Length: 126
Image (cartoon, rainbow, N blue to C red; front, side):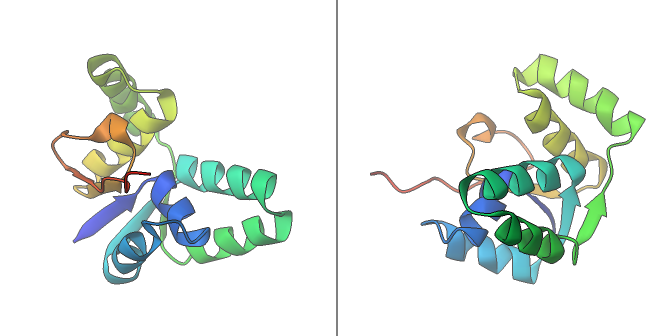
């Protein structure tokens, strides 16, 4: 399966969150595409919350997958998706990248729950 792992999934994986093992299996088994906006978000959060060294290590791992730059086609589709689905800019870019590449978006972000082409992994209740 071709998949786009959302930023929340990569963060669960790198920071050993409760859904880390679930995302790990998809990251290791699937043909994973990494939108540049996901690379940005993961690097930013890990650098801010953990350390620059860990953020750089995460980027090295993510770059072993297929990194997908933001193109004008993806940007325009993302804008349409944001308007249609009431998504934030980054979420629209991630979903548009998945759609443009016939990939399943794998996420635990509730904004995507129930959308076609999305595999939503529900976070454990606290």
